[in-house]
Image 1 (cartoon, chains in turn green, orange):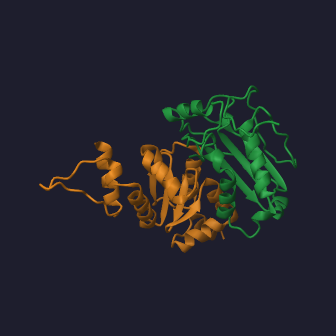
Image 2 (cartoon, each protein chain N blue to C red):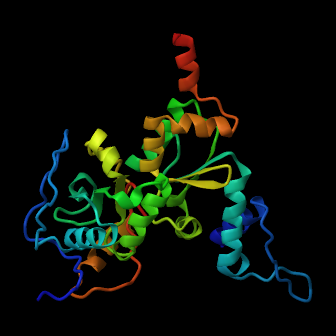
Image 3 (cartoon, one colour):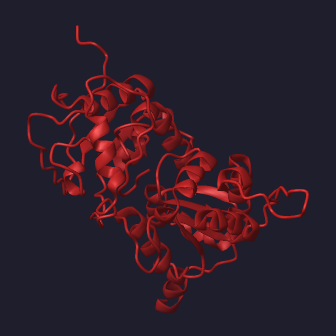
Length: 166
Length: 156
């Protein structure tokens, strides 16, 4: 059994370029063992929000961070738990589920939180705007990325910056 | 020292009460900005900042020069609705502001948008509000007539 240790390490495989002009129905996306942060995000959102449909996209390659980073994500969560909730409450549920990741390696999280009905009538994933290089010239980004690449999980608040970011 | 002055000035500008300890001879006791504008004071200052203007945006960069794609998206959306007169605060200039606003809003990311002192959300939420028409309604509640509404009326 793999220890439940979240490692913010550089994955061996190169980043998967994701360009999705149209969404397609894939109830489950196979977790990549080389992507521990992505796996953790998927696990937590699944456990806590019981989604009918879940997509977790690593968008780090779109930003001014080293290849293979797991720092920028876009998630689409379709769950009946969102019914009757305003957007802000839905997003807070997602933020709460990923509190640990957001206080460490993940510093950019784009969220789409839909009810099954909303997803059924509009099954599309939004696209993130292009990075405007906010991380460039900011030494804290590199420092935090280095700090994230540790063997053990630390709960030290990591301050990274880029986009819909911390 | 500059940071001390800046932080104190910011607190004073925002209307937050800042305790200025004085020595017996009346000189101001120079202490760190954190002491003069303690965390609690800063949270109060943020509370005043979001109430001061109808629309308040905490972002990376400025409306004229956003330094982040999502912050830029917020600026562009507001601009589309004709909202150009709003308060914006650049978190890249001030790490205390950057951390403080996340704590204040209990929201982990930037940008952050406030309408009449109430936290609206980040870029994703503002975009969805823009797409589903809610933003026009919310601006109307603030007494702001969206430029898109005006454009729609003119086209009819």
